[in-house]
Image (cartoon, rainbow, N blue to C red; front, top):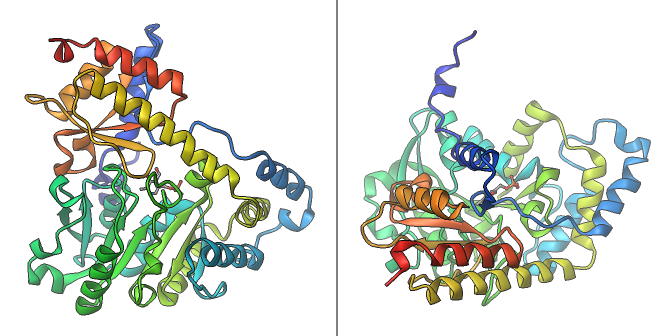
Length: 389
Ligand code: PLP
């Protein structure tokens, strides 16, 4: 056996692997487990995108290495998509990077911008990979608590000026995983002016950018000046149910895009050309499936929230993403309550503490099962002793 490097040892435990292991063990014992733990979209990729891949895979052109910064037609499709959906103008050659999923970009950006000891600002609770990326880069981290009373937006006034002076990179994510909050344009404007003042690069994770229930979520790049101070990560995973295809993009600040392109060339050269071809067809093609998907999550959301409220659990309605962020009943820790749901209702949820210290007191529930399974989960949860009079 070989010992792992210090860098590897410092990586946080793989939270979802642990959750999946517990669910699998219960299934093995013969229980009917409803998995609302991991954020893995349950529905298939739209048929026309699958056919596009099948046809493209026949082409010998795509059997070779693709151009190392991605196929120009795909970067043009990304730019056209941002123009159409968000009114944002992007130069396809210099302001779009093609990546193996948003996750890769979120980890790579720390390698690109941070030296050991440099400071990064991370949302707490937050998607665990911001911390994986900053840990790999040996960076120091300051958590920005996302509190319910601030609509789960960070309160920049709470960051002291020495932290702001040191900070080089800030991660934000709206629609938010795990809190299901959506940001407003005033908050994004505040972010741009803070970043300009302190020379911070903002990395906005827009993985759930197509999933807003009351209004269409804004891209960070719609904010005046955003391209000067930051990039946005967008992915095919959630919008087009293509999580297994591993394709996403970074868009925005040209210097950061250049660094990401250089690093990804050294890591994996480029993505399979046929996947890029199909992604371009998805972005250029009809967007009905994207709208239908949001409607599907909305129906699931309404079923879950109204069912839990009927059971006597006071829960807020998610504004975006495909998660619900539920305050645990009084007297419970998030881990103990998730454990209770798992063992007594056979429903897998993610304890909020797994997303950072400020996640304590909440559970994340993924709307990634059909309505009848969500209904079944609600019925089982309603029968728990905590909700009985
Ligand atoms: N960012 C957030 C907030 C996510 O929840 C996820 C996936 O769960 C990702 C990024 C990863 O996206 P991708 O599949 O493009 O790597």
